[in-house]
Image 1 (cartoon, helix red, strand yellow):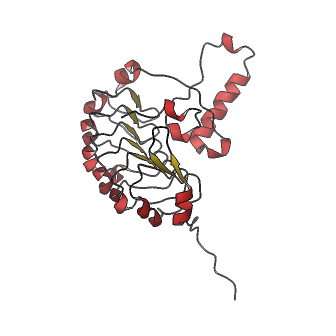
Image 2: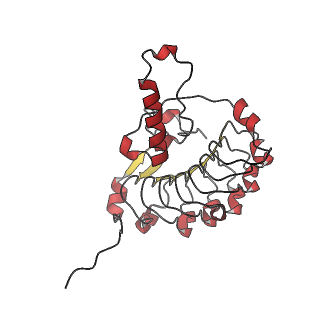
Image 3: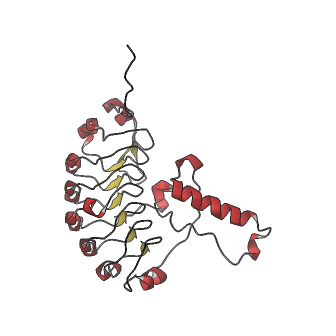
Length: 257
């Protein structure tokens, strides 16, 4: 009798594996790094490590952030970029210490964004780029500590003015959205203080849109003999997430509390 084909269940993470993946950050925080490991579901075993402060589950195949995510009460950093997530659970908004949340390059829609996000009073960096969001909740405009907001490559047609006028917002990326109203926030994008950097990343770790973008820029530059004669610099503005690309010094992009 032929064996039945098994579905893609992903790699199973044990508590021992999780403990071996623990690291200490440059500022002395405990970080669990399970990125790029072929995980298809959030590993329940790490509930035994509920006092950790940072979790990186990026570049996997996870479809759902569990409701029990709120049990990680000390969590300040959460990275789920490049998975298959469709919604952010309301319970994530109970993480009062959270300052960094990256869910870019997933399948999140407007319905998948909780209105309770206003409870994240300490949130400084929020990356929702490369999703399927059509409308941004105005509640994001209550996040007074927000410094960076990534909304690039979505389906947004209107940007609430309340969000563009957040007092501490320094980096707003809304590129490649189909804006159809005159309220498109052109001025905040032009006047925001920026530091443009060139990052290096392995080809197989880039998402398809980012890879195509890099290839186009490389081809454009290869046709020029002298870079100094170029009037136009390459545009890597879509790559704003520090964990989606490699950067030499971890301390240089961390937010100091």
